[in-house]
Length: 244
Image 1 (cartoon, rainbow, N blue to C red):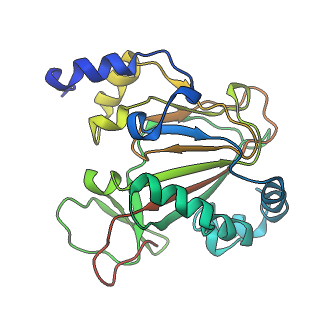
Image 2 (tube, rainbow, N blue to C red; image 1 turned 90 degrees about the vertical axis):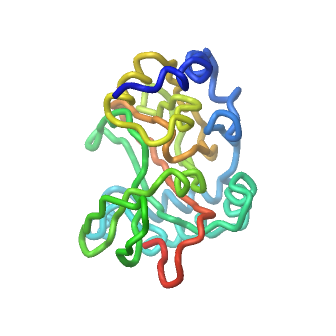
């Protein structure tokens, strides 16, 4: 089923606006950029602490990095980032997950248009609207309902400059306003919208709703495009349940 025509017109017109990332703001568009969030010292710390050839990454993968790498833990729990996330979500926040990405000549990939809708919890619970569930390496993963996604925020911290040549992220502003989308609905929005490349400098942060439509192409000139991807939430989980 395609998007309800009663909801399409005003929002679709906004999705066709020709804008740059610098003209967008999180409250209205679901995405914005903050310049120079990371210091040169913080960037050097991440570069010295983590890379794709790390034995820890090879053993544990790119998830839960705040438990494996001191630099990621320092960033994720810093007062500065917690304050940014808390002010935009208007509440006290907790870290949901921490990821690390790097497009290099050896590891270069593209990501199709999608929404981030899945979280990991310490246990499986019966809550209306949560599901389906899966278990990966002993960790419970679940697709969350829209009210949970609306209380989440993603901070993508750029360790290197990101541009269209090295496969930067692309987003469709305001697309999160359509809620959780089916594949056919995603295709319709992509066909009808203007995608914004998230061009950023080293130290900048792209801040976005996790369920905003986003993708990235392969790097045309792969070198390094390192990103620390942090997700926070102000949603209050039931007693005994925590983000895994």
